[in-house]
Length: 139
Image 1 (cartoon, helix red, strand yellow):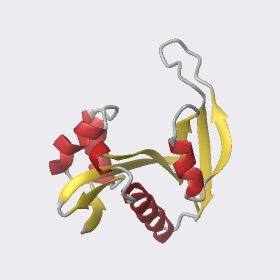
Image 2: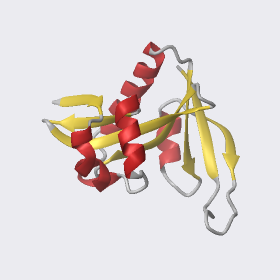
Image 3: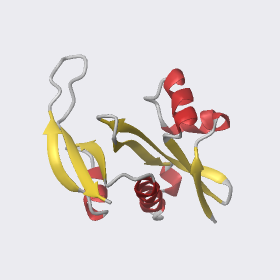
Image 4: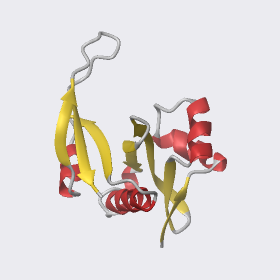
């Protein structure tokens, strides 16, 4: 049975297993502001989604990840749809996300109804990476 809920302080160990980019202080902030979700399968955490508000008013998914051994079961789609519905219930009319051009996630997001809306090239040596594609969806 699938359950999706807001992340809790007690989820930190699982969260850190999948998300290597979120500092401890920001984890606490995400819990307090309800800007992250945990997906559970039979009460076992298997995936997560975190987001920010772009320009302080547009929900922006900054990470959606399902543990490798649980991928390809539709959990990512369920988590994304749950987030989109939650954002719509909160009064938002659009969501954003991004992924690098060399990542396959772009196909997942497009299949879910997102469309390309721009890109960002970071060429500063400390931050250099392939171009970041931005995608949007009206909800």
